[in-house]
Image (cartoon, rainbow, N blue to C red):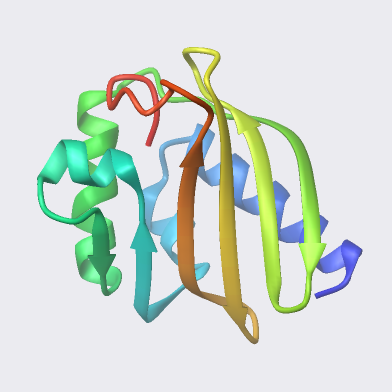
Amino acid sequence: MDHATARQFVDSWVTAWNAHELEAVLTHYAEDVSFRSPVAAQLLGGDGVIRGKNALRAYWAEGLRRIPDLRFEVLGSYVGVNCLVINYRNQKGGLVNEVLIFDGPLVIEGFGTYLGEDTNPAGAR
């Protein structure tokens, strides 16, 4: 992934999240995506691993329902080989890194990572 492609992805991703346009967010993810997050474990129970786009849709829909003021401010993005890290601040001021692994243009694996105690489900996704 080059920096221009990463910038386009991040801009589209954050715009869709801030508009709460879940289907627009999901256009970036493969059908067989897996997503790991301690917040998923808190909201849904289990091991915090979401498997498949439909399960990811259900998880994020619940997150948007519980956090109606959800908003992200991107602080930076970091490009690697077939991966991207998006560093952002959520609506409660919590710092988050989203680590995304790509196969072509689609995310096949993602990780939500949080600073310290910022895994409060009322404040993060």
